[in-house]
Image (cartoon, rainbow, N blue to C red; front, side, top):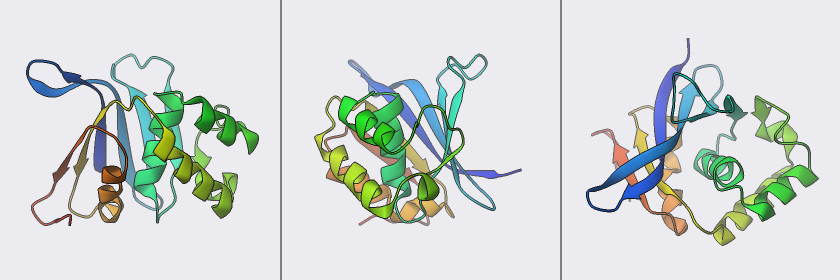
Length: 156
C-alpha cells in the first residue's frame, strides 16, 4: 500500500474563527510513483467519486493547483486549454507526463497566475514528501493558504 506524504484541505476560511471549512481533500500518495487523489469532503460517500492524477516530479505543487483550478474552481481558461490536449475529465488516473507536452504544461502553469477566486488551501507536508521542494510555489499565486511542515523541513 502506498504512503500518504502530504494532504491538502481545500475550502473556505471561517469568517469568525479563521481555520478552514473543507469542501475537498487532495492526498499525495507515494510509493513506486506519486498520485494526487482528489476527493469531496464527505469521505464516506464521495460526491462524484474521486480524481486521480500522476503528477510531474518537478512540479507537483503546480500540478495540485491545476487539479484544484480544473475540478474545484472550474476555471474556464484552464479547462479549455486542458481539453484542447485531451479529455481531462474522462481519464483517471491521468499521467500528466504522457497527457501533456512540457510546453503545454508550461502554458498551463502560466495560466494559473490568472485564476481568480481561489479557495483557502492548507497543505500538510510530511518529512519525506516529494512535494516539499515545490510547496513554496503556492506563494506565487493569490491563494489564501497555510503550510504545515514536519519539524525537519524548512521553507525559505
